[in-house]
Length: 211
Image (cartoon, rainbow, N blue to C red; front, side):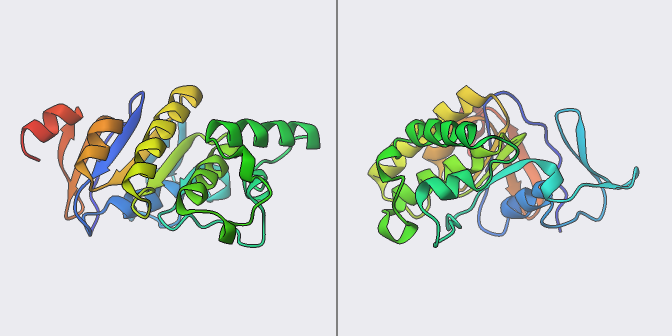
């Protein structure tokens, strides 16, 4: 069961809670991977889902960037080909410029010709982040994206995620059960427990209150 209601603000919204609390299911509902029984999902002024109005946009229509826990890179494509995959309706030159911009943003321009099997976990995650932004999404969803990388790599990636959000100025919704990540990244924290919102507020307030 999932009964969740929250608004995003400028910055990164953290979905926080233990395994099974509904964090990933919330992301999948926003992306259109699963359909709610009822309710409303809006990004900006656009309705993605509205049970009363009979609106249910397809995954392709929703303009969502999704970063999965296991990266989900295409193994037969190079780094730059993975990033380029999501770019639509642009000339070859503009596509190349956009790919280069994103590879530089995440500091992986030097591995543009590598295949995923020849990348470290941190490099794969950076390519996944770049690919999520490549299609100019309206919202970016990140499902525990750093759980498989080491502590040192995680620290650098947190800075790069925050920088990317500050540049594109679109909602980022970030799933984690890691308190330091939530404190470092979050402008707002939504605490979920058994499919419902248990608490909502600024990270310092939420964790000071022992949520």
